[in-house]
Amino acid sequence: MIKHQLLLLLLMLCISISLKAQKSTKYPGWEVSVVTKANTAIDSEFMNEDEKEVILLSNLARVDGPFFTETFLKQYLILKDKKSNKYIRSLYKDLQKVKDLPMLLPEKELYDVARDHATKSGVKGYEGHKGFKNRYTPVMENFMEVGENIYYGEYTPVEIVLQLLIDEGIEDLGHRHNLLNPRFNSLGVSIKPHKEYKYNCVMSFGLLPRSYEDYIQ
Image (tube, rainbow, N blue to C red; front, top):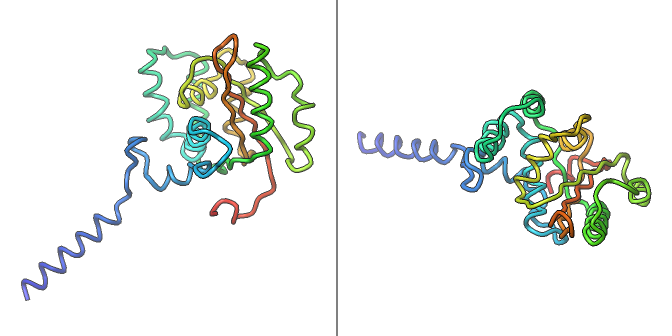
């Protein structure tokens, strides 16, 4: 009888351990299930690994802003020895309000727009959103709303997402608003060489009519 009780207790302990949320090793503190949910571009054949990770990190900020603050943002500020300013303080406040926004799914149409602009900007050495309307008019047949972020300089995927979220020097915080816009559900990312800044990353956002099935494929 005692033997059976011990076996039952051991079985219950094993079940309890298996039910505990697994933690990601690459993104400490984050549950594997959350990272998997955010990694919408994992099977994308048209983006490289850095571009896919930009989408993943953007989605982590959207799925749990407060925890993103405690992990990525705080660690980034420490590593960069970055002092607090009005942009950082406002980002803290904004992220506290972000929870379970729609995941950004990769879209080839948006990627093509981002790739073309990143390539041309890099070759010519210019910056900015000039020609935005002409760039996005062809995709507006399918997308109800679009937006664009551009990052310049040396990069890691984390650097790109954090710099655009902080959005220092941009008074209207347009890059941050795009990243945290609850209406956007689609994204294309392209990183290309730039003759002046070494690299540029273009993020093309969009609102596409979607069903629940789109998010569980």
